[in-house]
Image (cartoon, rainbow, N blue to C red; front, side):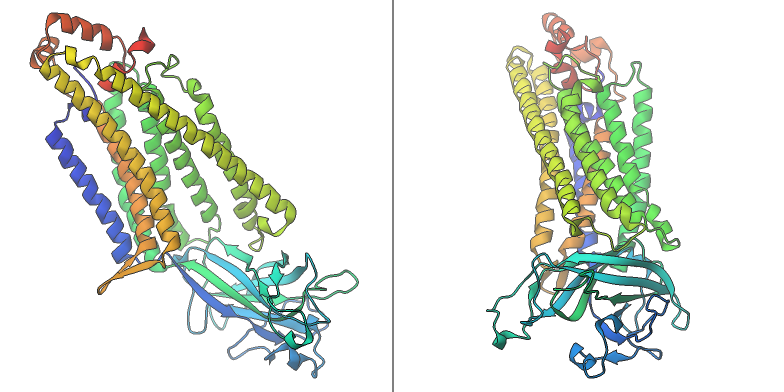
Length: 541
């Protein structure tokens, strides 16, 4: 009686394996919660208003907000009026990072959002659907005495969404509008030590450029980057987990190929899930420390998409292959209705990501949300992906219900078996149901920890111990799915225990009539597990 390891391993050994996996799961959460710092850091930057009175503003000249070669500065816009400084001569300068600090490749990415401080003036109010047009230049250098090298130069339009909380009367002039923050810039690598932003707000009344946008007093930026300490912990986890999954994957497929029969669909899908896990584990991020690879964020999104698409497909096929009323078993074409929404949803999210981060590879200031057409297109992709996800879960819930109903129906025939045989199959069914519940628990934990990480402050304090909740979420969930894939390949690998027919039936106390019943019920269907064979009876007939 051959089968999978999950069916032939003793309960005691399974408990030991489960305990070891649980211990690794706890370690994964503790690594993020106690060792790693928070995943990201947010730094606020206030722009410095520099004056550039040159006639040709397009000629390259970088205005530093501070330092030995700092620009000619003004404290506020009112100071520009007596000095006859025009709006086109004012440059908002931001140096990244703050003084006496350096950026590092360990920061992995830079994301900036922009906040405009706009004062209310009766003769210069914000018009409806107003759009601010910024002329933005980004430069970098790796030495404080070196010249700046241009990295990007773009015209950056952003729509203003502002409200004024008070009545628009003369006594309220000078009060600030309440404006939504605006997406500004995203760079997929931090390969240099210093960055410089020069932001201009060119005014052209004939072309209606920057007219009716209010009186902009200041430009503030918030820069978000990954913490270097978290990056090191994350890279270490990837480096450790990659060979672990790779080894179990090779071991699993070797056992499959040693079988006398060809691999069935379920075994192929488990192997494909291991490949997708290895794909997402491979620590190619190490190269980003020495190379300016701005496409790493996009590549990371693609890797995650491949894994989760494969994981969702596995759940559908795993349930479908255990449904005894499924005649087109062992063929991927039989699951096109269920896998189709996964493919469509994944494609929509891929197109959305390419429209956002794909364009940012050449223009770091681009955002698909800044135009009406882009916003509608992005929302369309997200809505279609959401509909596909809902359809998928409806299919999945229906198939899980069918599987449990079929197995429950099979349990009604167990009392007719001998006690030992009945206990054997009751154990198999319990283990199968337990694995299904573990799958649901993993999915639930992912959702729960994501929600907790969004609504908490990012860390908890218990006495003198600080737990980084967000870091624990990333490392814990990442470790959990690795352990889940590891357990699947280990437990569903073919067992090496092959008993003779007489020995098998004798050990289980099977009488001749019962042996005939079980033979016609089970052994005519090839499959990886006895539960797989047991639930396939009607399909075979």
